[in-house]
Length: 301
Image 1 (cartoon, rainbow, N blue to C red):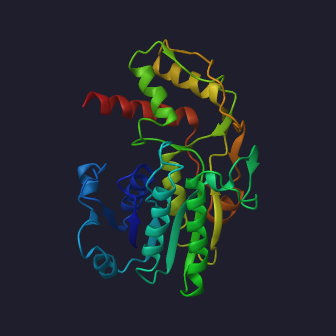
Image 2 (cartoon, rainbow, N blue to C red):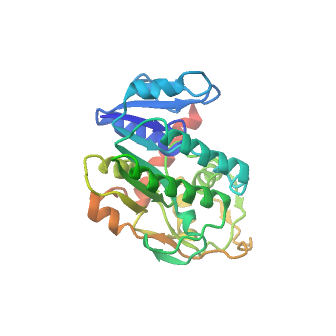
Image 3 (cartoon, rainbow, N blue to C red):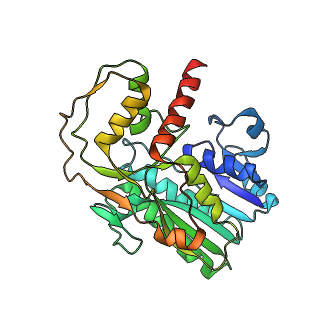
């Protein structure tokens, strides 16, 4: 299958591309001149790149004639930019431009749990949408654009609301990579809250497996949550990383929770599983062990 994939220079897109190529799919990806590829050389040579800064990139996409469009690109995912309205509005404009670029027959868009806004509990897709951040609002706007697209095109579509994902190539300033780095670098104290929040973390390879499992299924357009089914208390997550790395670090547990802190943020993926099948293969401890091994290798290069 010919897949037009955006965001493959980022964390989630990297894992989608790796899995797709391993399954024999052909990948066309966009990148900026300043972007750095994350792929190993063997994978890199199998990705067809189009530089978005150059004239004619739209024609390259049309000439590719993709069977599937997967949109994982997104600017402004850091805390500093999540409430930057201009940055987030540009994401909506870009997605709208991509939708109008080609008469796609299948589209998979990556949404976010942020579309739900503030909540406590394990939520399903019918939970009210009430985004608070500009990031969540922009994701929801893109979802609405995608829902409207089939009205003028005979198109199968899925909007996948992603909850917490972790794994290789994630930005170093996200929670799990930060803790791993501090443990491996011999730090003795890390400032944290009490860590009573309950989240779930999906291993990136299982995330990519889930996205690939959508391919080939028909008459299943709609919105789907995608989350690990295994909840974990954050303080237990901290301790698991400490144990695996054999660190002597102490977690202060003195930082206050932010105002309106959600204490239980879980997603129910039953709808996804009943439609596309089971996708979670990696337990949290195994995933952390694999990630820590890869982190050690990267730091030794």
